[in-house]
Structure formats: C-alpha cells, structure tokens
Image (cartoon, rainbow, N blue to C red; front, top):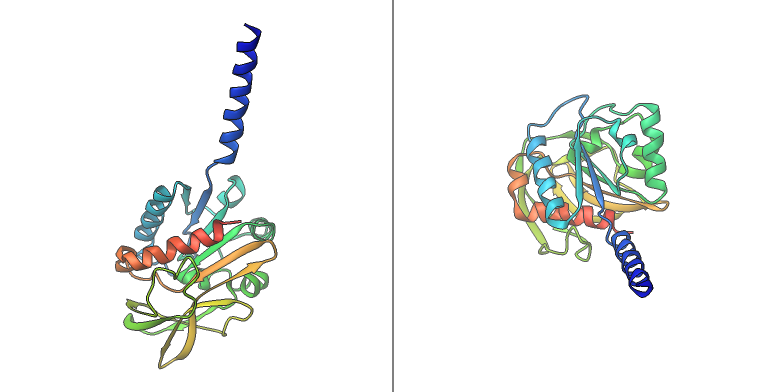
Length: 230
C-alpha cells in the first residue's frame, strides 16, 4: 500500500511538471482606435484568432487598453490601432513588458498610434505613419527570406494594399520587405530586439481582402511566431 501511495505521488508530480512545460502561450490582440478606424479590423481580429487556434495559442481580443495590465500574455498585437490609446500607466506597463522579454507585433496603422510617445516610436515602431496614396497593386521585394514571416514567400510578392509612407527609414532594424513607387524605396516590414524583448512591424492589412490572402496570413503568423519565441 505504501508503494502504491508513493507511485501515485510520483506520477502526480510528473503530471504537474509536464503541465508547466507545455503551458499555453497567450496573444493579446488590441484593436482600440482613437482616430481613423479601419473597417477591416473585425476581419483581421478574426483571422488572428484563427491563427492562434491553429497554433495552440490562447488569444485575448479586446478594444480596452486597460486589459494590457489585467492579463498576462507573451505577445501583444496592435492590430490597426490609431491615435493616443494608452494612458501613462498603460504606457509604463507596455514598456516594462517589452523590455523584460515580451513580444510586440504592429500591423498597418499601429504606425499611426501613440505618435507623441517618444520611446515607443524610437524603440518599438522605429518609424511613424506620414501618409499614403490610394489602394493599389504593388510588387513587394523579400529582403530576408529566413525570417518566419517571410520564409514562405518567393523573392517578389505582388499584392494589393494601402502602402504607407513613413516619417523616416527605420534604423537599427532587420528589414524584411521593401516596396518602391513614386514615393520612393522603403521598408514595409521589419523587426528588431528591444532589450530582452522583440518587436515586429508590417505595413500590410488595410483591406478586408488582405485578411483572406493565404500568403499574408502566413506573414502575420510568422511575425507572431518570431515575437512569441524566447
């Protein structure tokens, strides 16, 4: 009987340890807007939720920025956020989260968010929205094909989107994708480490149709995968 009890305790301990090892990772998707609101947001959120389900990640989708403080998560996604959406407490929390090993993924108008927050724009986004032309078809050149967000792509990628013009060429980043039109040659997706954390940004995702493109979905999946990996 004593041996049975010891064996049961041993198995329970192994089971508990295994649970810790396979603990589910969490992605928090914030789509709050305080300016222009894209009609593709709901479609985009649904697409990211599907990706998370496929990858076994827990997904928290919210329009409430206070949830940045309430929940624990491994990656935060700013999905077409706009304007001044964070208060001082939320800003400080996000800064500590990223610098201490958290992941950030910015999609499309994330570059049009918290423009007055110097740390965020210089260290996380690395470039700020300055304007755009009409939605159009454009060739995207894949600069880095070893990154999880681009490994599925050929050297060039023809797609339709709203192509941003930024206030600067991002510095100290790994450029993943570039575009060139009348507004010049510029990166449209890039990533970098921010102390112990990671930041990934892509300029795509303006249209609803973008969120039904298999290649674009894989691009987003890869960005989150990179940001969520320690």
